[in-house]
Image (cartoon, rainbow, N blue to C red; front, side, top):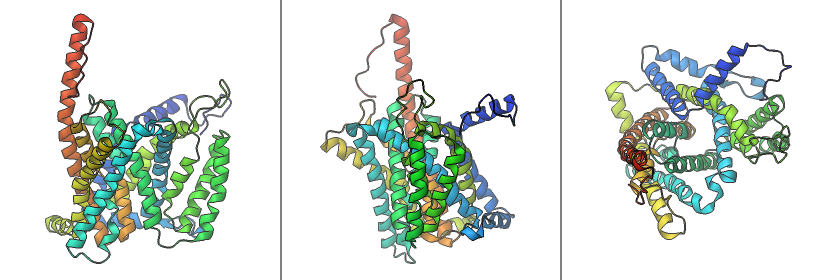
Length: 438
């Protein structure tokens, strides 16, 4: 991860490196990451429902990796266990930065979105269980309770970036804080409730490479050839322990220091390692890991209109859609109101409740983690897993469309205010002060 020094032999021309950097900068954009995620899912759905669907399933089932280390996994398993570890590493870095140096650093400011994240996990889970239990769904349907609890960071931020150019910056901060805490809760849920066979020795073994990794990054070591093998070893041992391997990504991220080096002018001066690693790995996460996971996970044969009806009338699928479309907004709004009403924590003064309402609907976009939990709950490739995928896609699409409608209208209001303020400033040099939220 080190930059190229003048004495390093060049494998690529200067133009090639410049082009690679431009591509990386593009991939760091929220809109591009969300678009690639959507493109991967759409491509998978088209292929899985085409005459060549057998080739898609054969591709997912291709096994690669060293059998001696019990890592001869299918490509679908590599995507969910391996590539998503990169996604959760980046999410963990972002979460730690928020706790140490961002909005989560101040308890009063963090309390509202953190409570909203908890509400957005509890209410969808309760609604899912109510739907599945009241319908008499058996066959372990309750195992999917966590499917509608996740908010997809990339997808949600991409929608907000596209439709909300004039929305308050506080809205993005609220959504980002909610989403990263949501991801942390998802990791805890996966580790506790979706670990069936725990092997203590490999789990204890993860502490060794993890501790060495932590020691090196604390000393501001950035050399990829030292850190990458340790990260892979941590991931492999976590995978062997029975705990979902993506947990390793978050644990590794939490060891990375956030605060900048105090040695001004020294070789370690500049951004903290968390910011450095996030900057370097976000293009890999947004441009490769998440889209490939979506491509290898979202493809499910619907079987025409009859198959779609069968999938969406499954009580599990109904529970997922209700959890995402209704549970998420209700949970986020109720938790936000309760904390704002009965504690000293306040909603950001730049936000109106209708803004939070649109954002809470946006929180119903559950994609990456929801698909992962569906596979863990019902088994990859099972009929119920296929129904879950259809439900997650349908629920996320509904949430995205409704949120886009609400926030688009709010964006127009803020745009008119901005234009009026700009015109007033141009007229007399003193802008009006809008004391009330629109």
